[in-house]
Image (tube, rainbow, N blue to C red; front, side, top):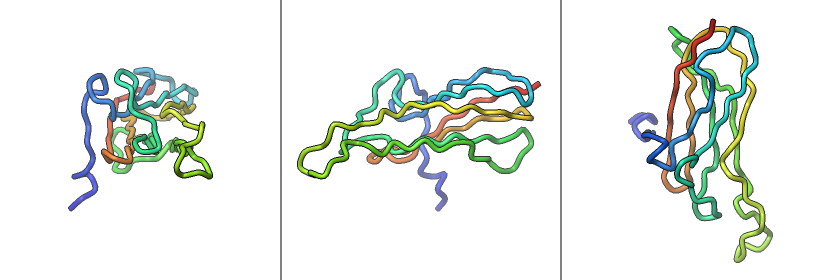
Length: 130
């Protein structure tokens, strides 16, 4: 058994669990650029204490590289936190965020997300560096 056997993927336009990577198709080496990450852009994902996205990770695999490099980990911990477990509180964090990235080589950006009910999901997109 491998962890990869339990990771799901799909088209984020039709599946609310797939993480979306918003980034340019190409960038200049060493130039800072923004990468947006979210789950539920086209179809809203529930965001309740009982059903929510717990985190999104951004990774990078350089062309010809053997290993993924973790660039960011966005954690969404609020989910109705309260001292009263019978009544969820007023604090919820939607699974959206962004990071500033600098790359020195072309490769693949990959995102993973975790739903507390439906498990691990992933997506990826290539990015060219000149």
